[in-house]
Image 1 (cartoon, rainbow, N blue to C red):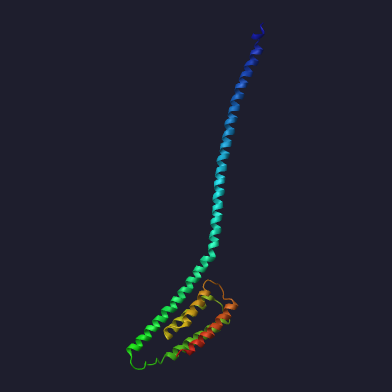
Image 2 (cartoon, rainbow, N blue to C red; image 1 turned 90 degrees about the vertical axis):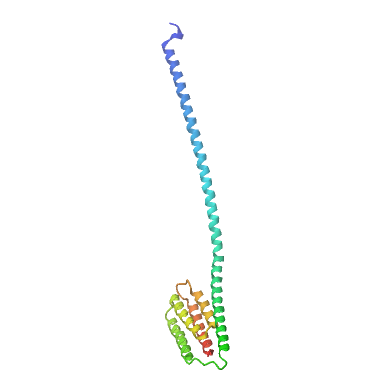
Length: 203
């Protein structure tokens, strides 16, 4: 039998050819799979880089906002001071207008309000009551409320006084705090004594 027609040789050749075809297909599959992995990794890297950039931008924005907080606090404090000063100016203008109208409308002496002394004594007693409260208490909200009440009574009594501005300033400092410190408590006691003396000069 001729070697070219040997069945074993033909089987081997056929096996080698089939194996070569399968290996070629497998190689093609591996190449495609590898390309897909590389593509996916590239897309993932792009997304990671994009997210990293956004995180960096967010961090910078957060730092910028934190840097603006002290300036914002100053603006709020300045606004409170301005409002208190405007309140003082309004009361002084009203007092001036009232005084001018009294002078224009009455040629003789202005009759003295007989209840003025009682009003002043009432305000002084409110100050003294607040002093006694401060000996054992330090609730800022309660103190602010009592000072605002005294402030209204002083306005009714005087028509406008520097004390009104000072009380407003002190109340602004108490806004937002949870408890009155010993230093602020002592400072308020000094202020109350000062305000009583100032009020005693009036009328």
